Image (cartoon, rainbow, N blue to C red):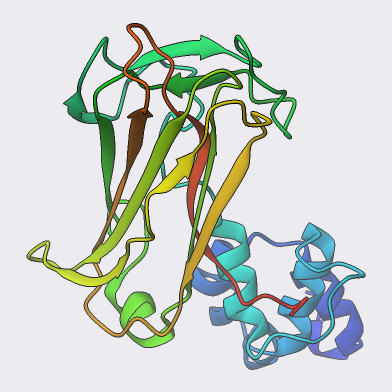
Length: 255
């Protein structure tokens, strides 16, 4: 039988860096003391982060905890569903459906501009009365437990894209709340309504916010956005939204 202890530590490191993280934690730590120590070392998780491309040349510093950085990087994804209108209005709760109601259109749209991301091909569009839609994100169901949320409190990053038609004024509104188990607001991002005048350049703009140090107890994220046109034209001449995202992210190494 091969005696693993006679192998150089860098060989153990290389072998274990190729093993999936869940197997490392659940099984490999039980093999021997040497493997446990290697798996618990920052060097292993730094190596895995480099293999996965979670760090880049733009990084200005190293994470406080490489293992945590790897975990959050590997889980990072958009927690909003159907954010680019590819499934019509599925997964969205329609809170207000005024005028000629919410609709889906293809980019760039009449009197519109191309979207920065060429993979995004559709957008939601509002009408001449308020159109508001929302999603409620259950963080436990998304795999984020109480210990992580209460003690680590990783960044929760909100991004939303909006644009107006060139020929019609419109208004845009975004509200995001971090909610408790009882769905009571603990932290709120509620910026002023954005007013866009008629004959704008129709460019897409991004609203972005990062929740940090939000305290214990967060269990849900409530995301709400929408708006309307400001000239009350029949049809869908109001604000356009797409490419929305809610992500839980590792620390920013470029800041």
